[in-house]
Length: 600
Image 1 (cartoon, rainbow, N blue to C red):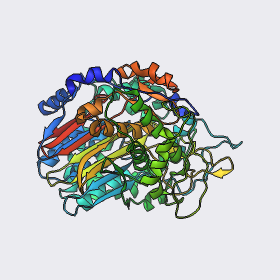
Image 2: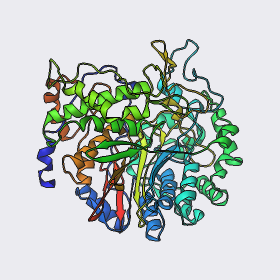
Image 3: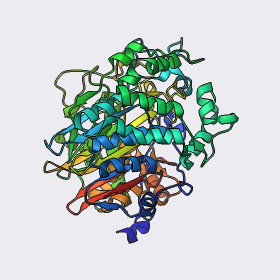
Image 4: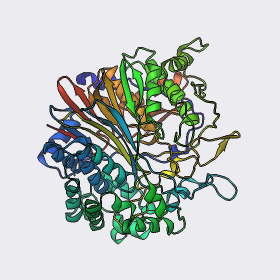
């Protein structure tokens, strides 16, 4: 299949007409960055060479895939020593927070999907950030009741929610880990104290965001020493981060939520010059990780399972796949198949915008949204009795899924940006972990806590408006509420056993990245590395985004003839996946970022 891939890609994509493309489109996604100057071990270099050659990494016993080779190696060492996937995740996340601080860390949140080999159970842990208890629904509105500009809301304390990642790390380890907690933090401590070489990706991100990183003295001192952005290859130490992790070795996650580090977080947020926030010590003290049932949708006889509300990921991925499940997809060179995928996505995003939010605060038709009969009805809108068959749907609207109660909501107007990271792990015991972790926008709120880590800007994932057309918006800001997310950590199940772990960063485009990669693998027969590397075509709100600089651009004329508006732009995913096959594990890492797969 690989030999035919360049020809296949040259005829592969489809666009759409814009209704109200989100303001998020005006902000460039994280740019792709070369990995040529990364300093790697022999095994990491071999994995990177395989990825760049388009070959999946093959293993029999265990595997870990993540966004930075240093983090992957930390996880691989844990797995090789007999640790579980939960143990390895702790090590990986601790290193990612140091070497990839623009995307995730102790100041952010995460969603985790877990398959337990011993019990056969599938579950999820919600480590999403929460809104401070002092917020009101008009948090992101000015005195006239109009929404703030995005950057006016992001940079500073106003956007900071209660971090969830430290508690999630601890909770996953408590449930499923078996290695010593403190030992799992040692690799990150060593790197923080001895220093690590700034990667090309981190150096580029700092240079691109230097003005905002210079807003606050502590952040500027770390990323812009002597007033200039850190350069690629520079040795960077973070003694404060090492001290934070040592405190976590002694006290667990309580080190972040109670005591001096917690006090430093709150002071940083509330004293942020020009844009103070509302986070309090009470918010940190009462934070809890929540176990939630996985949300699953049927696709080609498989169960595609992931994180339910407050994430929209599993529901919207499930809706897209459930709609196209009504059609045969067997030819990725056929633009009409991309029309089916694109319109299925538009329909799913229409439902997402109206119904999806934190279900602890608002009622949701969760089961109805992925009911096969409802998705068949939605599919009929694409290929039913139409006057213009073969053309893009002229417009889409939310559907009417089955409810177990009555409720009316207005359409959401929130934004979501693409700085996130994904980890996929399979251990030697057969446990499977899929976790997406984030601080939201690149470098989050740009506030550096005294503990050596950045604080999130997750509150800007809420709708800035409270009502639409006189109806309340489900994803409005409320005290203690978790903002809606698009993070889509996914485990695919067949006959009660896991067959894939996958996920990606990318803001609301995460959903399309994951859905189309699954289609590429299961319908079009691409191996997991080729499926991940496939040029992107993503449709959410009307316009069909095509990945610039790739063969995807060639389909623009054909898609425009179908009635779509096309936008050729950077689409920088970070897909990391492990396919679990009868012949062993096959891992793939996104060539658009610096990640690799390692296994044994």
